[in-house]
Length: 279
Image 1 (tube, one colour):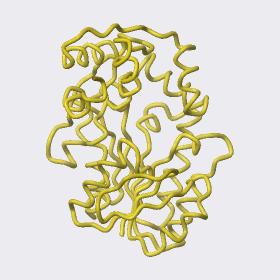
Image 2: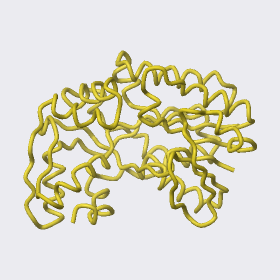
Image 3: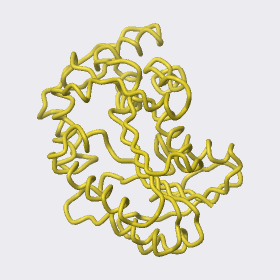
Image 4: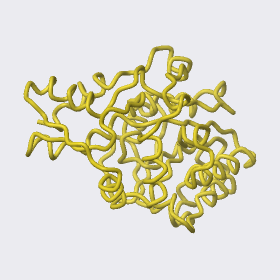
């Protein structure tokens, strides 16, 4: 049995689907109730209280670990989940980390993620680490304003990064969970091209066949919006990358193709599957 945390998210949903299509027994975990594919067991649990996961992890062969925003907050102890998995006999853990661990190693939240990565490496379990850059699905934050007002707002409108399709992250994670050859692997995942927020909005407008106005936020405005959902330090670390990506953050990684045998999907590919959210 494979346990998937973050089951309701943009990575957890396609990962669960990929594992069920591979005929694996899957248990999904999220903080709130969720609809899951037929045959999948769902457990409601809070990763901030790892003890509640003990029964779920018992006799699981593998765990996909996604750390939600509150597990990046000061005082959180995400390494407790790794300890709990090892204590309950889990043999393999795939950790969803962040590209920033290698590209911005001194950012406070990146330092914390490095601690989690190191704990996994020393756990005695098989492991793999997946480090994506920016997500194409972050564009869903514009869905409501595009539907109702024909506008989209973001900071640093003309500064881009190679955003990755979460379905590609899920595909790589599934391969790491199922195939021994990926044990000990660290994979940095990007899309196939650098694309700016303004270009993303233009792509959405073209697909809709109607104009969408782009409004550029100040950094302070963007942080105020992000701080409603993630800790302040995580917002700052993310905005630092979006404001001035370095050469490593602009590099197109070959790891999606290395694992999946095909190139990464573009922002347009992601949009084709999610256009209804913007109508």
